Image 1 (cartoon, rainbow, N blue to C red):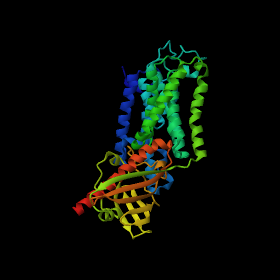
Image 2: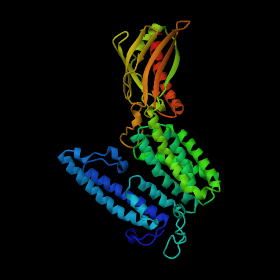
Image 3: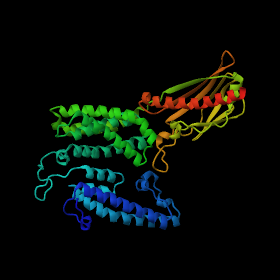
Image 4: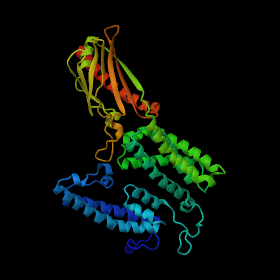
Length: 466
């Protein structure tokens, strides 16, 4: 790797992978620290590394600002634009000499895609050149995919991910943010199609092993998850929950893609196959929207033995004191957890407030059968979680109205010897599909919430009685 200062400004010639990586990393480091200095010293604003990728939906519209803040924001924007253009010339010149199309160097100015294409340029091997034409060994009559795909396994894997990732981002944002459908199109068709398409592109024109095909298929979903986290579409916890299903479907898509690559008819019909795969996701997303599936109601029951009479247990059931801070990783990761319970009134018609870490559940009492049964409906639900994210705050649509509790009850059964069997039940529904998969997560979470409440009641009651 040989680099001269003049190489940073020239557009002719070529550069190797090491030079491109060095210029990109150093350029970003210098640019980011200049941004921090100007934001802090001149405009008195904090500036973190993820400020470079603030999503458009959260950007402050300048028309809504006061006149003074509007002027400051314009100056702030002009200063950062000047810095970006300066670094843009350097990185674009090296990118253009590293790649055969100016399209990729222009991607420097696109949020998130610039990072992906930068990584792509760093891993793709150089093409063998003949004379001054880097691509003259490839026939201009060859299919477009054959002309742009490198021959090496690493290069074609990177290219397949570069092609499928933008489609994955667009389909995810379209389904989750525009259609607001978290169904079969998003959680089934998308990861399957990504795995299938990335494998087909990866193995186009070159024999590939089954292991490498499914590995590329799984990485297509992993990279999409990282991209969704980077552009503040989803948080870490939700991506982890969706991960097992998405990876299994990507592996399935990669396996089918490997079988397609071995078929003799594939190379003649590759464009048709890829078109059908890409059409599959939005088609199923529209079907989800049109079908408007009615979410089923599920019930979760959790029971605990308490060494105290039902009368003593009842007092803690109706209104519990402050519960200790959680130690479970599940709740510390952002899942909403119960803090205390309050009661306003007595008997049917009274209102119980179950205070969670994200807000209160409003629970009008329907059955007040002391000390045996307390049953209530739920008229107001707080958000089910606070997303873990590198951004300051995100609020994806699935936090509102997709996981809803409709009612609950406590049932107390006397035991021989003066004890009580305390059973807590929650009825809920969720609009996430496949329902059976997401029920595994929601049932487990609600069960842990029940245990947190029941153990607190057990501890308080047994301590008071004994």
